[in-house]
Image 1 (cartoon, rainbow, N blue to C red):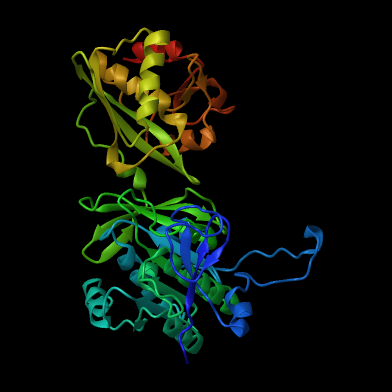
Image 2: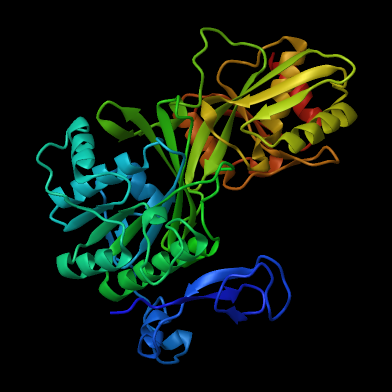
Length: 455
């Protein structure tokens, strides 16, 4: 059969051209022509079919809503991020830095699902079958019955999915897959978009759960067109330093569960293992209380985590440095200004360094109060009391605002043995929590006076 020619479509106006041009002949825009397959008339309907199953028009009240059945993967932390497990017909996109553990985790999950009686398929485009078998042996998965296909041709992959009929399939990676309908190289915008659309359509039509492994750019974003993330049901990101043994898997998008949920894993000789008590990772073990350290309770999805915030205030010069790791740098500058204006703590001529222990990134403003208390503790050289923690958002007017789900944060800290807390007045629980002394504040200066009284 003759190979179908490709055409080029303008992303701005939708105009077409039989060959690539730097300038769109229709609207005159530059660098907007993207390669697109030009199918035969009989194939147009199939190629541009809807990604989801079509249905008749109906009102929301008449549509029967049923809970999606979930299949556990055998890894509790991965199930937490996925929202309880994999969903039939769901498409998951997982990205992360090279060597961080994407293929390792997915191979472990496929083995657990296969042992549980599920039909599985691992499609590798970057390794041979022998290399995958060697990794499985290193992970202690000798004799695994997971089916492996080393292939990058989209048409062959789709034919294999139709013949094998797996319940879950992993495509490692989407950037290596290419379609014969396009002349561009694998990994190009047109190839990634076209291949992902075909695989998504196959998942919805057959009910197979497909996991796509995606490469990331130097900035850490998923490589390829942004439409790739809109197309799939779930987007997961691997986080963590390759030199550290701990990995975080964060859900950025999830149509079947909560977003910003995280799973915590430890890299061992036998692969990735879930961490049941992740707060222990983010808390440093000091023999005695040290200045510049304050524990806070942050929320990651539905899970409260205790994280140690460390600050170091040191003599600077004409241009003092402000550096934060794991926290927003611009917010640090704002907090230093509020600290000076409303609490009388001046750091204008000091270098200020702030770090969230364990490599975790905190984006919620509930860390404000803990950051300010750690900075003050380091500046004065006085440690905070043992078993002390704090959380709360701080405004420009010096007010301490409540943090969402404050009682869950307090109960989690009390469960781990913390006994003294400074929290916003609006987060004060109606009933006392056993073993926990809570100091409620509504101003920054009030929080500073309370801590001075405790030290």
